[in-house]
Amino acid sequence: MIRRKNEMEIEEREKMRGGDGIIKILHFFKKEEFNANVRLCAKLIIPPFCSIGLHQHLDEDEVYIIVKGKGILFDGKQEHIVLEGDAILTGKGESHSIKNIGEDDLEIIAFISKYSENQKI
Amino acid sequence: MIRRKNEMEIEEREKMRGGDGIIKILHFFKKEEFNANVRLCAKLIIPPFCSIGLHQHLDEDEVYIIVKGKGILFDGKQEHIVLEGDAILTGKGESHSIKNIGEDDLEIIAFISKYSENQKI
Image (cartoon, rainbow over all chains, first blue to last red; front, side, top):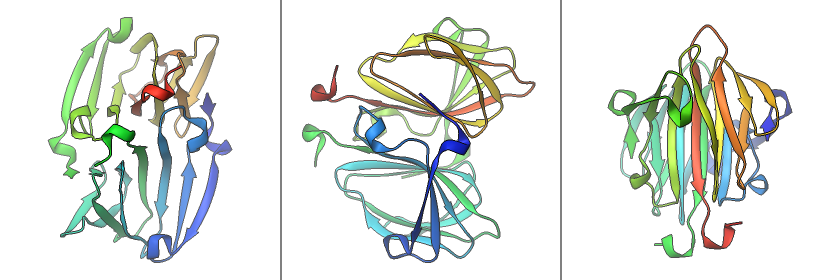
């Protein structure tokens, strides 16, 4: 299945997970389109000064790939500056939040894979 | 877990899946680092004139996100030109191959999520 850029659904989420501003979510594919247990496969577009608030990933792994911009990631313990090319893996009940600290949009490719019964912690 | 761009393992595969040339695989995270059933989480860098040969995805879904360049994707039935911003989902036993037809590298973010027992077809 090929999904062209201009066919992708764009969702807007205000104060996402208690964060600031409006985040755009460009869905490459929706979870129903997978046979595997994939909950999210999208590009997150976070405008300047906006953020996704702190949230936990229980029974799933999430990968963020920073494809453009600069952000502060909080991993539940400390803050880290993240840049284009960096990747973040969050799972096993860990939490995270991310804020755009650059002058342009922060763009992140995000992928969530849910655990099967025998992988749950 | 944060993986910085300069810490990522780069693997080189010659004639990958019977294709042409040498493909670089920049691993964001290795499969062992996931708790979920993720087999691949990487950027594929395909130089001009190079390709990944035709191969099947049984018991797993693979997503390609074209982040740079231009390619021809063969989906087992017909060829399609794919461009930056397009995404491809291959699973349920389908096959695909991809060839760079541009003047610069074709860069693809690739994820493979394997099926649990009850998802296998």
